[in-house]
Image 1 (cartoon, one colour):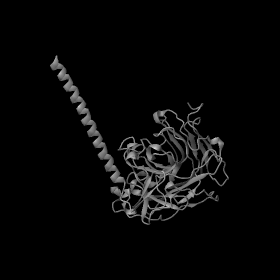
Image 2 (cartoon, one colour):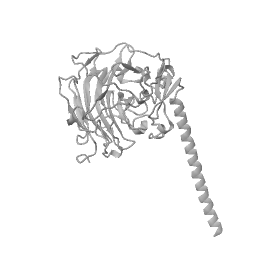
Image 3 (cartoon, one colour):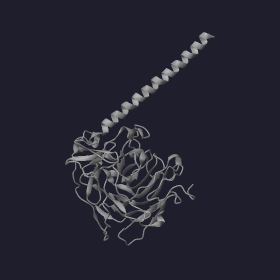
Image 4 (cartoon, one colour):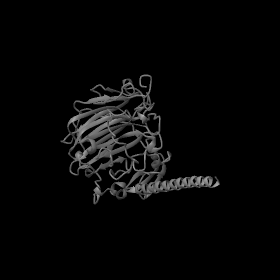
Length: 398
């Protein structure tokens, strides 16, 4: 009987030891992968700026940025300025937006010439992700899951028919409440071509996404993919793709300014267009800040133009169950200016490099009891525009 007890005790000890060893090996392997990714993303900086929100902005030489780790960009010559800027066919003058700044600007420090500001990736940023491999990436499919399980909700306007070589809009900035760290609320524009595993997108806007940024402040973001969000593309500069040329703003850094209910309104003015001589897709913000570009070599079907251009709000809720995560201001579209969120001065860029009002806009809200959409009146300085948003879970949105 004693021998049996000893054998059982020995087996239990061996099992416990094997689990401890396996756990240690798993931890060591994870730590190695995290450190490798940090080394890959955080390039040597000429200067670092500490932001009051805890971010560190590294001033990285233009030629050392993550984009140039991409084999598609081997021997790439940086395009410092676009070859042209699309001209508008409209008689409307955009309403001037209030100046917007990022938190790291507060101490008055900026990056030197020939460098770009990159938000430093921290270990905890990576550990918050779904997995190390999916860090900085959307979960596929990442666009318009209208018939899916209900994880994504949209309030959107869009244009199809023909080819689009750019998009423009002024997107109202708010600070929506997000119920859980792995949920997000955003407002953006999409340029889309292809479908399924060959879907190409260029995306830009602002978002509140605690899982990525570690805070609940509205943040300037960009995204791209060439294979339907499977393996290519990422948020901001979390992979090799977007080439930044501007030293004033950092993609992935939080804004200090956002709209107040019945108060001052702030907006992000975005223009994206294809620079036909080079094939690059340029991004401009705030009417005069040329952020950089997505090289044409990143894409397949988008090279011949987008087949869909969309603008709107999106909320991701975990488990497919409605939460109290806001879209936009957290108020329904019917409340209008200063209360509901807006996207105004919608434009598309045609084959002649002209900015035009989108023809035959379609629109939809996946669940108008949670988040709604309302077209704005024509004939104002807002041009083609709409209001959208909502509080999420409520008496009519269980």
